[in-house]
Structure formats: C-alpha cells, structure tokens
Image (cartoon, rainbow, N blue to C red; front, top):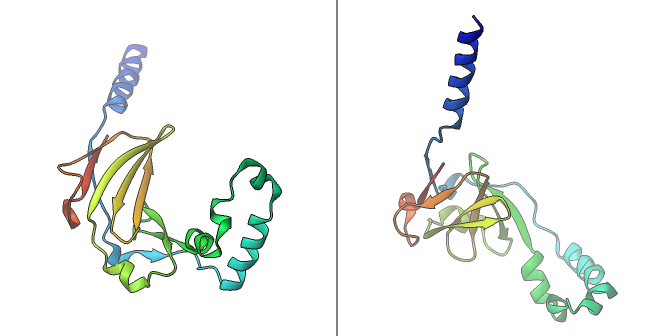
Length: 156
C-alpha cells in the first residue's frame, strides 16, 4: 500500500514538472475595454503643480517632464485598457479616440524581461502596446514584425 502511494506521488510530481507549451496570440482590440477613467484637465494641472514642485526631484535632477506642461500631460493623460480576456493590458493616451484603439491591428510582438517576469508586448502603432506579464518563458513565433493573428509567441 505504501509503495503504491509513493509511486503515485512520484508520478504526480513528474507529470507536474513537464512543461506544456502554449501559443499566445496578440489580442484583437475590437473587444478591448477601457477600465480606467481619463483624468480631467483640472486634475492634470493640479497634479503637475504637486509633482513638479517636489524639491527632492530638483535635487536629483529629475525635472525633465516638469520643464513643459505638455510633456507632463503627454505622459500622464492615460487610461488603463484591458483585452477582453483580461490577460493583456496597456496604458493608452486619452488623446487617442477609443474607436481608433479598437480598430488597431497588431503590427509587432516582442518578449522582454523585468526581473523574474516575462513581458510579452504586442505593438499596435500610435504608441499602443498591450503587455502580458507572466513567470513562464516565452519565445516569439516567426518574425517580430507581424500583422494581426500572426503576432504570437510560444510560452512554456
């Protein structure tokens, strides 16, 4: 009895360590949703004043975006978007109309690392990049320059 339980435990352990490869395709943005609200202009001006008046940033030389309100606005006037399945997300400029985001088609895919996380980044042009964060390793299938459904990677 103990021998069969030990064998069963070893079998389960060996099966769970076998990596299963999965193909992950860049999402179709036609069904993507904006999950965060765009900041109001008054809010942006208020946070610009607060963010850029921090003396610690001046002493560290971190005043690049504080030299011009339009630079700050470009960086901070964004909203969070998610793919329909919720796996991919992106911060998209609120200056870009939602219909334009939904009409965008994938034009590239790349894999990057951030610490122990793997980032699968799908590019859609106009600065729109949807990212999937995972702990598994991924490799781009085919060319990094791709279109639509051809933009995918194998992750295991």
